[in-house]
Length: 206
Image 1 (cartoon, helix red, strand yellow):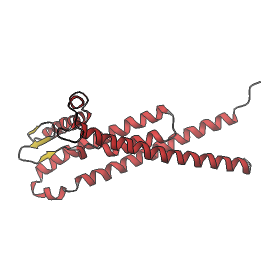
Image 2: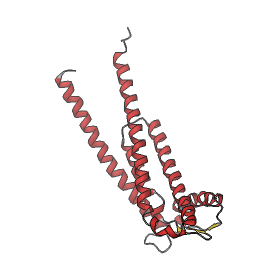
Image 3: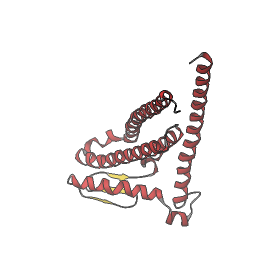
Image 4: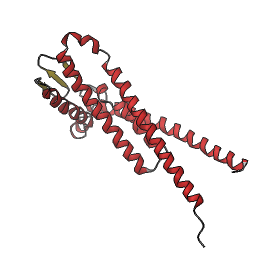
């Protein structure tokens, strides 16, 4: 490549980077604030509460239930008796856990979705990474809720040491997601680069 081609390639790379950053910011704001807005729509007494939407399209409650039910199964598997409702898990002779909006992991899911959708990768790879990432966050969240129920049941005197479990969970999840994104980007860019190289060296057809 001559100097002009190098400058053009660098310019294209800079433009792609700027587009990625802008798209990441816009998508993250849309997803994160959209979820917050929908939480208000689905919550009785909230500013934007809508009874019809809350009854038929309450994915916030659906995610809560999807987290609570398997968590209770795991807690019971460790020998505890637990009862639950739409937002709470009570472990008999153990802790009382309130599953609110901040426990759902929608913030990190919003970041993951924004990053993956903004990154210039093939759609098949994008949706695959999105599905794996969201499933990973969900599984880690179930493990966190179940882990709190079990650990606080076994170590009742140490409950004050679990005050910052939200922060610890967020750190662990973000580390896992960043590692997954690093591997995904490395594989994706390697595949794209390999494809471009093969196209470049392919002999012309007469």
